[in-house]
Structure formats: structure tokens, C-alpha cells
Amino acid sequence: MATTVSTNIDANAAQFVAQTRKMLINGKWMAAASGKTFPTYNPATGEVLAMVAEGDKEDIDRAVAAARKAFENDSPWRRMTASERGRLIWKLGDLIDKHTEELATLESLDNGKPLTVARAADVPLAAELFRYMAGWTTKLEGNTIPLSVPYTPGARYHAYTLREPVGVVGQIIPWNFPLLMAAWKLGPALAAGCTIVLKPAEQTPLSALRLAELIMEAGFPDGVVNVVPGYGETAGAALAAHPDVDKIAFTGSTEVGKMIVKAAAGNLKKVTLELGGKSPNVIMKDADLEIAIPGAASAIFFNHGQCCCAGSRLYVDAAIYDKVVEGVSEQAKKIKVGPGLDPATQLGPLVSDEQLRRVCGYLESGFSEGAKAAAGGHKVGDKGYFVEPTVMVNTKQNMKIVQEEIFGPVVTAIPYKNVEELLPAANDTVYGLAAGIWTTNINKAHSLAAELRAGTVWINCYNIFDAALPFGGYKQSGWGREMGHEALELYTETKAVCARYA
Ligand code: ADP
Image 1 (cartoon, helix red, strand yellow):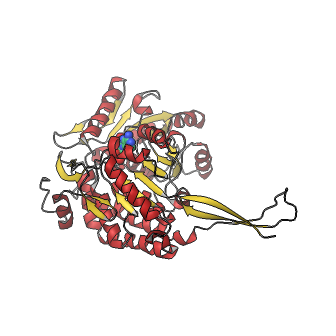
Image 2 (cartoon, protein in one colour):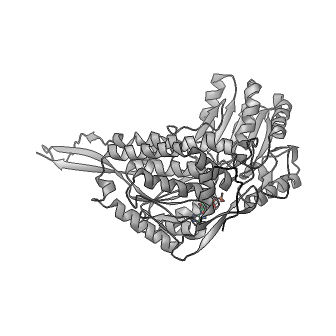
Image 3 (cartoon, protein in one colour):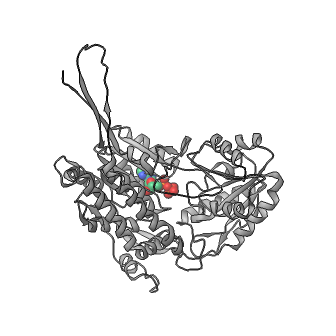
């Protein structure tokens, strides 16, 4: 029932969207218990792209039961050696590589991002994440611990810790990097030996469903990974509140993150959150503008500004402010806006009509409060959800467009006189996800990096991600970290074992 997409695309992807997609529970592809389906749209046209089984509480219950069964002590997954587990995860990484074109096409069709970007970034980063995590399975070690129990003189103890998987994990992911967010979540959970119920975003369920097929092809036992597409208020809420889920990992808005925390309180499941941001990107007087100007443009316009770590507040030393604004505006005007499948496209549509209205609402709010657009500022065309790359000037720190996360290709450029004025302004946000610094002075760079309240600080670069580098937020940008060995720790419990032997 999906609309036809261009015949000029990867044949496997075209075939994938042509059929109603089911959900994966206990290794089987199933329709929703209710029989309901929901549409996912092509943001470049606003037309229905594919129909997908609409999971709800009953499907979540089934998926959690399957994940629990797969986590039982004598299950094939729990009996597997760490090395065998690692090889399966590595194989999944290789299968992703093998299907790059298909996955990148699905990502571009469903999310709107340029196919060229999905092919060069989203898909290989997802594959690499699994390979990085595969290596950790054999390295999750505990410690031996010397005891000095004062009230049992003469007694001797052998004590050690075990790192065990946290159990059944619920994972709820957003639509901005649908495949990569699935990888960030699944990789460490699988490496730690957990079983999983994953709920992709309703706007972009397709690549996670294709990934689920690859998971089965790789040979993971039934029930280890279950994927239930559906809406947040129904399927997502049921997963967050489920009494038999041991941990919930969520990426999305800060607003929904707070709801997840409340829902998780019922059984006090562990919670990790990767939430919103309003990241400051600072260009100092001595910066190399040849790299800082395109760097600042890419910090906000990459993925159409739909990155939780987007460099959305550009702070520029007043001495070079005009030059930088002119440079970033020139970059913005040069960006080729168009459908993601067009090889010339550099900036695709926003993901949904809702996001289009939200971003346009912020632009209007900025204008009504006195801000001006040095570049862009408007919606593009009547079909699809396109917005011009926009540079806002004449802004004040207390304006909504400076304080709130826009999640679109809109940067506010603000001059500063000195570091004493810069620091409080840069840190004046409820968020603390990321920050950027552009300078040729190494002392200034590291001293500012230490003072910015953010989980990631990029110096003379931006949006650099690596499976080994932890990512997450200070303040209301989240709890815990994704990627690196820190992510793994958050999917394990530490068990202390203490034995008296004399
Ligand atoms: P955005 O506003 O950018 O769409 P959300 O935070 O609403 O981001 O969505 C991120 C993910 O959270 C999606 O998978 C969505 O379905 C899910 N979600 C939304 N509302 C809830 C909720 N009340 N409980 C659980 N999950 C939710």
C-alpha cells in the first residue's frame, strides 16, 4: 500500500518499503496484536513511504516475555561464551557493511538525510560501533579484593567481583540517526550479554527493522533482540513502565526523558538518558578562520541541525564577529537544499511536518523578538519539509531561539568581548551536551574546555564521533554515557562475592 518510490534506487530498499513491515518478537516476524498498522512518510514529498505494524502494550508484553526467556540462565544466549558472543556482534557489523547501499537508501527515504551522508557516515559508523563493542565481550573483568574485616580477627576471605549483564533492557530511540542510534543502544547491551526490546521512532522505523533481519541472519538466538515499532505514548510508554524490564535506555527530548524517569520509578529500573542540547560553539579572535567558518557552518547544518549536539549558539569574539557572520552566512547560502536521494543534495528536508512547523515557529518567534536573518529564515517550497539554512543575528541571551533547542538548521550568532563575558553566557543553558572551541592558542583551548559544562568538547573540529569516545550530557542533557567502555558499564551489574576460607 506504500506509494511508489523512484525506480532509480537500490532495488532491495525499494522492495523493503513496498511491503507492510512486521515486528520482530522471539525471532518471528509478527503483525501487531491489534492488527493495526501505521504509516511512515517520505519527508521529501510528504507521501506515505511504507506501512508498519503498530506495536502497543500487548506487543511490548510479548516482546519483554521473549527477552526474559532469552535471558534465563540456561538459554542459548547465556550459555554462549564471551568469544562466541563477540563473533556474532562482529558478524553483524560486517553484515551492515555488506548492505550499505540498501540501509543508506532506507535511511535517506525515511529520514530525509542525503543518501551521500547516510552512505559515508550513518551506515559505516553503525558497523564500526558493533565491531568495537564485539571486542569488549572478552574483557568484561571483575577484580579480586583484599578484605580486612575488623570484627572477625584471624578469619580469611577470598573476595572478588563479577560483571554481569543488567538483564532485560528496553531501548527507545529517536528519528535523527535511526540506524546509528539503534547501533549505539544495541552494541553495548549485546556485548554485556543483555536481551533487548528496541522501540524505534515512529517517524523512522525502517532501518531498525532491516537491521533486525540482519541480526537474525547473523545468528543471534531468538528473543535476544526484539524490535517493536509504534508510537511513543503507547508502545514507548508501555516499555518504560514495564515491571519486568531491568533497565531503560532512552534517547530523545528532555521533556520525554523526564516522563521516562517517572515511568521507570514503578520498579526502579535503571535509567540512562541522552537528551537535548543547546551547544555553544566558540570562535576566538586567534582562530584559523579558514577552518573555523566552514566548521561552524557544518556544526549546525550537519543532519539539518537535527543533532542533539548541534552547535546552535555561535559565540564569536567581537573583533571578528562581522567577518565570521558573513563567512558562515555565505556557507549557508551555498548549501544545496533538496531531496536526500539527489546526489547533489547537501541538506535534505526536516523529518516531519511537525518538525517543520516547530522550526518555522522558532523562526517567527526570533523575528518577533527582534532577531534578523543574515542568511535563510524561511521554509522552502510547498512540497516536503524543507527549511533554509539560517543564521540569526541581533539576538539576546534571553530570547527563546537562544535558550531552547530548535532541532533544525538555525544558528544564533552572538558577539562576546572577553572570556569573562563569554563563559557565563556559554554555560547559561539547562543543557550540557557538547561545545566547540576554535582557536590556535593551546592554553586557551584547554582552559576553556575545562570550564565549559558539557559532556563533549571539540577543539578545532565538531561532530567527531568514535565508538571508543564516550558521549552524553551534563545537566538536563542526560544521565550516563553512550559508546566507549563507559556505555558497557551501564549495561552491567557488579556482583561482589565473598568466601571465607579460614
Ligand atoms: P522528538 O520530540 O524529537 O520526536 P521524542 O522525545 O518525542 O523526540 O521521541 C523520541 C523517542 O521517544 C521516540 O521513539 C518516541 O516514540 C518515544 N516517545 C515519545 N513519547 C514517549 C513516552 N511518553 N514514553 C516513551 N517513549 C516515548
